[in-house]
Every structure is written in C-alpha cells, then in structure tokens.
Image (tube, rainbow, N blue to C red; front, side, top):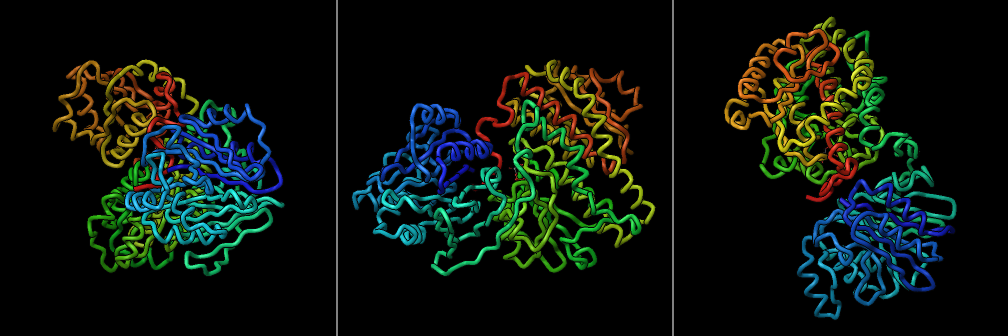
Amino acid sequence: MCGIVGYIGHKNATSILLDGLKRLEYRGYDSAGVALLENGDFRVFKEKGKIVEVEKLLSKKKIHSSIGIAHTRWATHGEPSKINAHPHLSFDKRIALVHNGIIENYRILKKNLQSKGFQSISDTDSEVLANLISYYYQNDLEEAVRRALKDINGTYGILVMAKDNPNMIIGARHGSPIVVGIGEKEMFVASDVSAIVTYTKSVIYLDDNEIVAVTQNEYRTTSLSAYTVEKDIQEIDWDIDDITKGGFDHYMLKEIHEQVDTVQNAFRGRLNWDEATAKLGGIPEEVFLTTERVIITACGTSYYSALVGEYLLEELAEIPTEVEYASEFRYRSPIIKKGTVVFVISQSGETADTLAALREAKRKGSKVYGITNVVGSTIARETDGGVYTHAGPEIGVASTKAFTSQITILLLIALSFARRRRMSHQRGLEILRNLVNLPHSIKQILENSNKLKQLAKKHAKSSNMLFLGRHINYPVALEGALKLKEISYIHAEGYPAAEMKHGPIALIDENMPVIVIATDSNILEKVISNIQEVKARKGRVIAIATEGNHSIQELCEDVFYVPKVLDIVSPILNVIPLQLFAYYVAVERGCEVDQPRNLAKSVTVE
Ligand code: AGP
C-alpha cells in the first residue's frame, strides 16, 4: 500500500506535499517523491528511502509552484530504488502520475506502447500507465485518463497532472482509496484523510470506478463512463493531535497507552444495563434473532481478534462460528446458506483481501457486517452495516488499540446474540460489569510497564520465542507472536499450549524464552502442566498470570501480573503486556518500531 497526496491552490505546494507525505508514511516508506509544475515544466524530486531524503533534495531548491503530486511507496513491482520511485513521467514528459495499486496487464500494455514510441525507464507498472495516458492525451486530461483506465486491469488510486495544464489534477480510484479535501481556494487529494485534516475537515470519498477533476476552486466527480456522480461532503470528526506522538517516543507506544480510552470508546453509549445487553444500531435486530451460523473473515491482527470472537460467540451465544483468513476465504468457494451471516474485521477498512472476501460473501447472497475503525473506508461503505471501533487513527504499523477495540465490539455482539437466546440477565450484568472495569485494569498494567521493559532487555538478543495460550487466550498468544516478529524481527510462534508437545517442544532449550498466558481460568491447571513441560527442558518461562497467584512464581523465571477479570474478557487485558514486551524488545534492538521493514499499515494490494 502506498501513500499519495496532491495539492492545487494559492499556497506553495512543496511544504503541503511533504507534510502530507509524512502523515502517510505509515502506509509505505521504501522510496518517495514529489512532482511540481513550475513555469510550464515538471520539477521531479525522488529518492530511495524515507521522505526525509526527498526533503533534503527540496531544501536546496527554491520552487515556486502551487500545484503538485507526491508519493511514498511500498514496492509491488520493481525493487525500491530512485528510478522506480514515484512520481513517474511519461516518456514524452507531458504527464506526471502517482499510483497506489497494481496494474495486472501492464506487460502487454508496455509492449504495445513501446511499439508506439513510449519507452519505459523503470521496472514499474505505474510508469506504463503514465505513458498510456500520454498516448491518449490530446488536450483533455480527464478524457485521456478515462480512456487509459478502460484499458487496464487491476487496482489503482492515481493522481495525474499534464505539463500544459497547470490548473487541474485528475484523481481516480479502483480498489485503492482516494479522498478529496475541500479548502478555501485550494483543494487536496490523498489516500486518506490524515494528509488533509491539518488543512480542512470537509471531504468527499471516491468510490470504485470514479474520477475526480480538481481545480483550485472546485471539483467534479464522474463515473468511468463519464456520468456525473454527486458526492456528499463529510466532516472529519478528529484532528491533527490525534495523529501526533503526544510526547511518546513512538506512535505504537502512544496507541498502547490510548487503550485506557479506546476500549471505553468501543463500548461507550452501547451498553443497555436494563436488559443487560448491548445496543448496536448498525446491525439489524433480525440478525440477532435469525442467525444460525456466523463466518468471520479478516487478515493479520484482525484475524486474531476474529478468533477470539469465535470463542465469544460459541461460548456465550452458542452460535456455530467459523473464522477464515480473508485471502483463503475469497478463493475457496465458501458454503454460505440461508441463516449464515458474515462479519469482516478491518482496522483500515481498505485491506484488499478482506474487501475481496466481503464481495465474495455478498456475491454468494450473504449479508455482511463490518467491524472497522475508519469511517468512510471502502469496507465500511460496502458492508450492509456494522460497528465502528472508534479507536481513532492507528498510525503505528503494528496494530494494538484496534485489536482490543475489535474484541470489545465482538464481546458486545456476542452479548447481543446471547441475551436474545439463553444467557441470563445476571450473567449479562456480570459481563457488563467486567467490561466497564477494564479501562481501570488496563491503567494498572500500563503503570507496571517498567517490568516489561526489564524483561525485554533480558530477552532482546533471543533468536526465537514461543507464545503459548489456551482457549480464548490462544489467539492472544498468536497476536503476541505477531507483534514481536513484525517489529523486532525475532522469529516467534504462537501455539495452543497443549499443542506444544506435538512437535514444537523439540525447540525448547535454555535459549528459548516461552511466554505463557496463565491467567485464572477453569483450565489453569492444564496450563501449569504445560509450563512444567517447558521447564523440564530448561525452557525460560515468562508467565502472564492473575494477581494473587503466587505459586506460579516457583515454576517460572519471570511472572507479569494482570488484574483479575472474567476469563471471557481476559484477552483484552492479557494482550497488553505482550504489546509492551514486543515494543520494548524492538526498541532495545534499535528497530524502526512505527515503520518496520517490508511492512505497510494497510495492505491494499493482493
Ligand atoms: C498487524 O499488526 C499488522 N499490521 C497486520 O497484520 C494487519 O493487522 C493486517 O494487515 C490487517 O489490517 P486491517 O485490520 O487494516 O485489515
């Protein structure tokens, strides 16, 4: 997934574009570039590496331009390099383009264009599109873009400028988001609102197969077939402070600490104490009454929260539930019969595989409901309804507050199902009480962060780690392993604690830290047995245990205590020490915590 941003207005474009790129850097950061139109000519500055490299280039120049486009890249075609960085100019230098997405038929297009004199100098599919637009360009840029897009297969979010038209930027989307910010005698176009919110809160979102022609004072949205499309102006409900570090060293640490509030935001206004249930307006009542089977599909961390949802729905509401990786679901001809409802979970609301799974489920006739964090995101807009997590922008590439918010929403959904079926009023109240006490418990865990910092220092040089959990905390073990590997680059695996003896136990020795989620539950004794199996092989056990369980200290090298809470709610708490542990290990190892190598915040390519 890449970040794109464009500006046309009355101010100097350079600083606005660079600021926008920095707000989008979490979307991809292996190379970056800016194209400005000055005195009828393109001035292009691009470099491999972070945006600061481009900033250095521009700091040596005095460019007077109030129109430009910019790009920060997560490579799909062509390795990260200066020549493959965007913006790309057409061979005849008439067109400048930035692109987020994949053009699947670019090879044949490249060959045809070469026969017409349009050579490519990079390895990218995006440059081919710039050439194709130039090939069609007479003097109507919007028409040239429209004709070129009809020739391509694949996904795109693009911004295009023509050298001889300094008054217009064309944007278009199919599969990669484009949002237009409406200012005073200035317009902004970007991949997401974080690049725009400093300047305006009034935005419109493009849908697939839509084109927008933007000038300094107005915008016009049309379909690929040139029909006018009316768009509602939406107001962004957060501001730039939400996407600054707020005194923390990294966004990830800030977002871990935000969980005191974000878990509360997830259930705020959604609790019905009289009925001991939840109020979820985005999901029709009939869904809670008629659903016989649930499928949840997602990717990455969202997939792990979905796994927690499976335990919640089956244990609380006795509804058969299956969880599928979106990338598998979309290709395996899933059986979806009457009475089945599909949920998709996505923090960004733009993950390509999850969006494709959503569309496949709808194609099969199912209603699809979303649990997403970004209002107006593609997934949010294509579902039949759903629940926003209200976690605020999550900038750190490693997902943290989104995970705990997703589980909170899944608990509310399970409670809504359960209280319409067999769960007692009293049990419902017990769950609500545990839920509303969570922010206080999270605060207590955060106050003990230093213990995790020490543990991280102790184990930061490990090459491998195992994370073990049982039942509803098995997905938390998976998530803890993912956090560690994606930001510290240490190989880590999550396993059901009992499964460890069916193979992974061969890995256990005095060099293997094993983090075990051993909080109070009716299977705690089983987890203790697994700890003893690890200890018997000199494994170094770090336990996450419930306050008051002193005996576990005899078995483990280290114990981190969390407040006592209902087991069914414990994943929301138990993941937090694992997030902090992964964070401090990555810091100890000098890793780029907020922008881990090879990763992007939201994978909008397949
Ligand atoms: C989680 O830390 C990762 N960044 C990644 O696995 C992420 O959860 C996954 O790409 C899904 O993203 P989404 O929730 O925005 O769909």
